[in-house]
Image 1 (cartoon, one colour):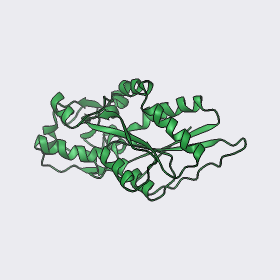
Image 2 (tube, rainbow, N blue to C red; image 1 turned 135 degrees about the vertical axis):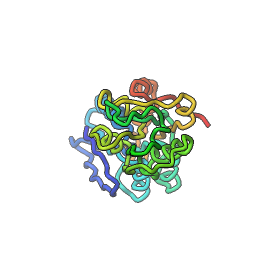
Image 3 (cartoon, rainbow, N blue to C red; image 1 turned 90 degrees about the vertical axis):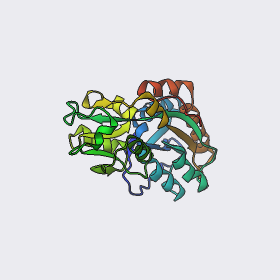
Image 4 (cartoon, rainbow, N blue to C red; image 1 turned 30 degrees about the horizontal axis):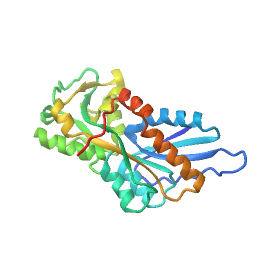
Length: 253
C-alpha cells in the first residue's frame, strides 16, 4: 500500500496496468484528516483482496474534488464535508451517490507547554498570540471561520495552511502558539501537543460530516473494487476504528 500526501497543486497519478499477474491499483483520494484511519483500512482491504494495491492520496477535500472533476485519476473520493463532495457530484464525477460515514469537530492545540497560556478559543484574540488555521477553501478552514466568529476572535491568523495536517505540523514544530485542528488530529499527535477542548455545545454546533463515493471513469472490475471499499468505509468494523481515532457519529441536519 502506497501513501501520498497531496500539496495544493494538481497531481496526476499513473494507474498501474491490470491484467495477467500484474497487481491492480485502486486509487483513493481522501481528506488529510483521514490519513491514519484510511491507512489502516487500506491494509485491511489489501489483506482481503490479494493482488490489489490501494494507493492513498491525501490532501484538501476541495482540491481533491476539483481534481476529480478535472479528470485526475482516482477511484474513490472521501471528503471532510458535504460541500466539497458536492463539487464532484455537481461536476458529474461520481459513479454513485455519496454516503456520510463519520463526523469530526475542531479543537485548539498548542505546543505541550502551552507558552501563550491559551485556555479557550477566545484567548486566540489576545495580543501577541500567533495561531494558525486551514485555508478557508478547505473544510477545516470553513469550520474555523465559524468557530472564530462565534468566539468573537477578530485577530487574523498568523497563517492559513493548505490542510489540517499542515496546521498541526506548525504547532508541533513550535512555529505557532496554537492551531485549530480536528479532534482526531489532536488524538493522533498525542504528547506532541496539548489540547484546549471546546465546550461540548460549541463542539457539537461546529461538527462536520465526512462523505465517501466511488468516482466515474473506472473499468467494471475497478468499479466493483471501489464499491467494495466504500462498503468497508461505511461498515461497523470501520466505525469502531474511526471512533477509536476520535471521530464521532454522523451529524444529521
